[in-house]
Image (cartoon, rainbow, N blue to C red):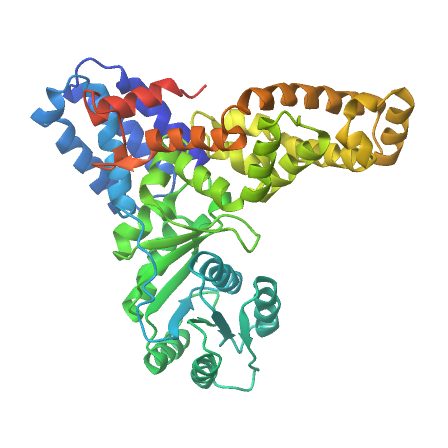
Length: 483
């Protein structure tokens, strides 16, 4: 996410981080590079101009010029302005209405509206324990209603059937009435998209909005369209009282122009971002976390939340107790670890949120899906073993290795490699077994969360005896440099 922007910005800021004093000359050079980085990221020109001007005026102020580490203070300014440009903080959905709360989704064709309806339904069901009904008012696109029926079935949402002969307003009103009968908490209405903004589409959606008066009207837009996303959102906002924006396809957006332009141009908050094709790939948009990722600091807070949400705590606690009692770490436990990693989105999703992982390092580590392929191969090897072999790996001799290799379609060397890796991991797990096993690893990640999470003035929180927020931020950036 934002690979190109991250590379350019971190390179520009490295040149000024170690600067003992800030002058108009070195600020001018750095700001020129920052401006070029933002323009190449397809950020809207008015947004770039305002961004650069705010940093320039603050950087030349007495507070920064007299700071203990002016260069580091400059980095803090860029961080703060990135957060401010994207909206300061995450704004949650407003569901404070007599059930059912109605959410209307609008946008152009191809932005991923229908899939986003299902993702949002899943999000509300899993994290907010809401009963959700979905309905499609798209009577133009072939199979649009059928698509929503399929994806809503996958996430377990209530589907309200409709057909092409009905009027969109009638469909929405009937869906809301049905939701009341079925005691649903939320109704999500999918609307028709177009290849471009036209008067007929705007009139239809205005009539629909007036008829159902939704508590949330969200504009769904493809983030890969850059500043065009912001311009389209503005056009919709002029026609509809939008309450927020959902950026889709963020995982494929190497530039970041939409994320940095939408809030500034429309004044509407970005509430969610789509980060993949799967129906669980929808996350709340946190400006401070995105700013950390843009500046190469990772997103440890989101990583911790993901671990806590996806790790099977019962299995983790059971393994921890087993290790504390000296039960050992067998191949069944290793298989569980692979399954837990897959639940977190695989190795690539894990590494992408770690601080200090440069784009080149990440690409090298995940080239051609190598880690995922290796995990699948190791799973196949373990699943080709008998229950006794998994429990007591020391029993696996030459003949057993040949049988396991044939059963999993690999070479004997691959089996040997897995057994060696298991031995190494077993030693590590024994060290972690006292006093709290797996939970100790999670607590360690929470320690990183405290270091990198936003606190106070919107910069990573720091020890009480640290000289300044800016200093702590720059130290972290220096500790995890781009290669």
